[in-house]
Image (cartoon, rainbow, N blue to C red):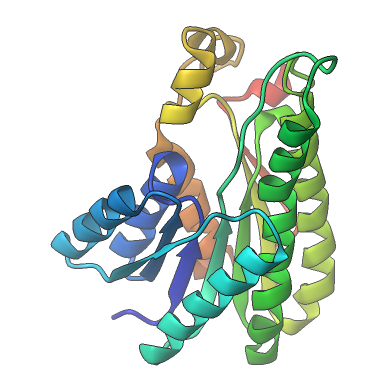
Length: 249
């Protein structure tokens, strides 16, 4: 029986898509969100075909207003179903690679807007209601590049490192009211964006870790689903590495 609703940003492909499908299979109603309506409908149709419940909301997260509008729409969907919006997965992200010198200001601003500003204002709009109810969980999707200096990923890594700090700050801020906040930090993962941006370097990066293989999006979704579940009720403020052991070598 569905007892709560989750908003998963950037859930029309990759890790977000896998997370939406996994949460739906776990009995959660899912608000699928992203920029591509066609891909969003495909995810919703797949969830419904498997017996789950989902609805798509188009969103291009880049500022306070877009985050507030998505938060309001997701809350409306949850309330119309008589359920709390109890899970927020901040997965939507913009990647950027290349040397520091020559990085255009527009790229810098776009990365920070999507990867940091949008999650900040989604939490600002949704966490207070969770706190008022005395329960809720927020999972931020980070990256190996937030903890390991990877050449060419300075802006992207910095945006996610800041998000990891917000994870800890929010855990301290909202924890006394029953809201848990954690990050999942994936290593090399076989997503359309990673494969397009890194190509063969994806395998080379994965080979540096003890397990030595590229993860599937479902591997990351499993960790997110665990942190969203009641089985993780005593876990908050944690950065969970899901990277094949890359941070131990």
